[in-house]
Length: 411
Image (cartoon, rainbow, N blue to C red; front, side, top):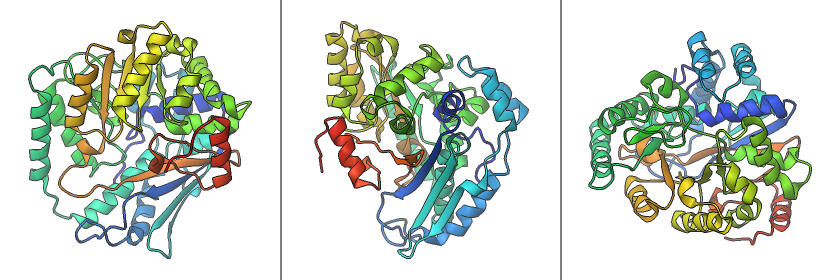
């Protein structure tokens, strides 16, 4: 059984789910799966044979996932977080994932199709564990004797780099649940990082304090290992607001205002790339600059993004040194160190490293995602600063979205 706890997911799933319960309990959504790799060969782990051969095994693991419920200790842990409300925890005490909302199909092409359809409140927790299941099913079949020694060697190199001269204030966080090699390897990585880097100890802070491991997005391991759980919002939240808000052009503003209504200034990291950076900055006015603690980068050139954010704060008469920039797009440790040197002292910094921490044993990782594509029967999409990250099956809607937000089409 790959997933043994419903806490084995990212914190932002719970923070978004609480908003859904309180503000959008009737929303209906659809998510779709996409693998960005070429077809993969199970024998070599390289481009070749597709994923469809594992469809039945993936279905079996999802069925086991749907048998889980929150344990009393898990609910107590969630209740201890200052931003989680008691009625939401009471709801989770009754919550179950329902297999009827998920279909896993083997396509004639040899690929797999995963669709999740149903009430947003009852489907939002599927994404992260389902992606973790696909990853672990794939790798336990293709790498039956994984080279853990190589994985440990690579992790040791990363730790050595992070402990370099002048980097004691550089803090990283684990964002790697969805693309990890396995749950056992994920836990080992976190235990080693905790022991050798030291940990943060201020739950809810963007970067924590203390050692160089600020925390983890994974709620289960945060509870289990005494780490800081980290996360605020994801793309699906802002995408859903395209269908839930009063006017499409105002959907980003509506999303941020709805978030502020729920959290009253807490969890104040805004996601900046649902409509691209230019559209984000147009909407992220003086009010939001002051209200939110900072912003998160997840596509496009991170150095350019950081410079634009700092300039935007300065134009709005906000001291950038009081704000946090979080970098989380396909980071490696060397890239993290480059970004740290560029922006150190100019703002507060945090770095979320995913695949490069939890799936770096020498095998090609799966580049898989599950994205929301519809809300209340209407197409929704993001127009990322990295075009390959866009995911929408309605080209007319994408064209309309570009027009509404004045976004030039890129290839």
